[in-house]
Image 1 (tube, one colour):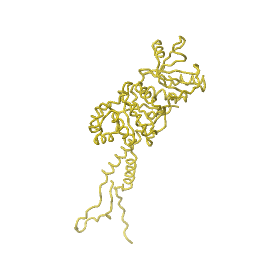
Image 2: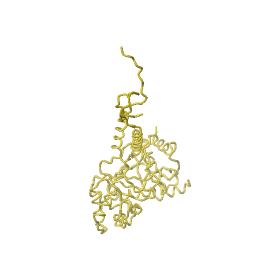
Image 3: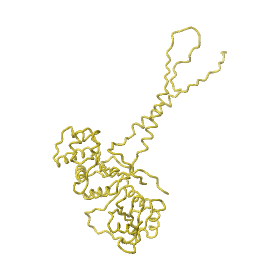
Image 4: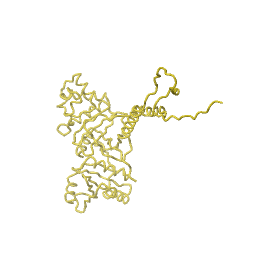
Length: 171
Length: 199
């Protein structure tokens, strides 16, 4: 095993002499410990590497006129704990249909991608997390915007009209 | 002619070189390792596909949200921390002793209502954990607003990062955003874990 060998080959047999102390050191435990620590540090350094996503909110003091967004180019999504509500249009109007989907690849991502393909570059997503939503749901929703390559989105507080619409839809 | 002896091969292997490499690597990883900063509570952030690494080099003001909805504040800017303590204590008429200041500087995180500040700072940081239930931020008593305000006053370059637990309620996050927006802070870095990009 691991050792330093500095004795130049032992002489077998022969006359009795004063015993020569071996300079060999058993390095096995040291190597064991070394590799154990390496494994530990390698695993701990690569595990925790947080990333950030930047969220820009509009300046509330800024009264500058903003460009209006067409209703037909807007999708309102309401992330809830396990599902996502979405609708187009004004919540108080009778014709507005609240639909529901999930966070999967074929769920809200497909809805957004389909509508984006139909509407084009002006497509805007309005995110109104419900009262029951977790922080994770909001991050997931922002993430969906990033995945579908949508730069136009707004994060708003949920309003009573939208809540009523969710209740009315009964989903 | 001398006799030719069959050379006996030794079974012991020289591991010195391997040892050297192992310890070189060990030293490298030990020196580059960055331990997770002390946390009042364990926070597991949600994951996102974002690839921007969290830049902790320049000043950072970190607002953390625990799974129960407690709000904690931390900053790596020592000057700002000192300034915050001074102003907050002054505002609420708390006399700060050298001992209290030492304890404040020793723990990175602020997470208690000001009513408990005197009590917390007279304890060792390790003992004060039970009292660290979060900074109040309801509309009648928004202490977070003051803490952040003073931190920003001391160092306007501080970037605001929000690190929420994935199971924390969205409402707490909305309240934090509201509080910060009232002070005209509109850019937030949301700390998340990494996740693979879907095709």
